[in-house]
View 1 (cartoon, one colour):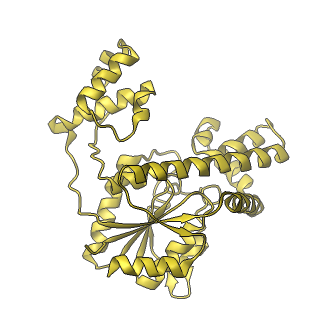
View 2 (cartoon, helix red, strand yellow):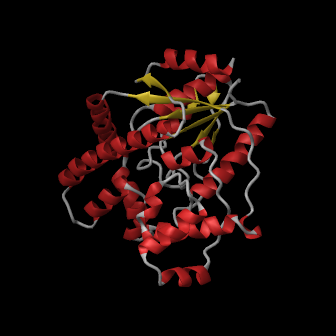
Length: 303
């Protein structure tokens, strides 16, 4: 069956955005970002938005789900899924090809494996009831509600366990109304580099970001009122630069440790993608920046 969505995924520094933009330009498509941090305004360098890449010889490629909320606000997989379905539907109504690109595995998986995510608000009564239960008891409750879990780590973390129970209980009540989902039939392509090559790309990109003002960006966010804890929650670049700004490490230590941490993060991303494949998500892997191969394969699934 002809695909109605093209997905370009890959680890950090794999060059997936540049490839996706080029593809969207050639196919008259629009980009939908699947990045949990690029939704925040004013966080450009540390999140790797690379906004200049959306300007091509064929004009500026429209991009969705970038710069949509303030850093003080919260964004999550439920909000991503809801916004994605709205944008996906609108693009198809205009007969425009959506190109979903990103490396946030949970966001990608939420639309590629059809997660049911009811808009469950925190239930203080339920939380009080759960507070007196052991971890094993909570696990039994969740597994009784949902024997087949997408993410088994929900069983290990107590807060996530209770939140998952809230969501599953909401699913069984009228307050857990589920969003009507469009039919998504995706052609999924992964960008793959040999590990040592990706490691060099990570180092080069980190140096470039520091030169472009990543430290100054974090300092500005702090001066605008974001707490150190909030900056830490935004992930590696913001966490390590924040430690440097608090004089907890030198710039050399920050750069060295951050580079290693980003490499470890890229490895975890690939582990997530491989797990998606084990769940039945078919990913066609493309070597490095081989655009001609990617373009050929995409045309094949769209024909």
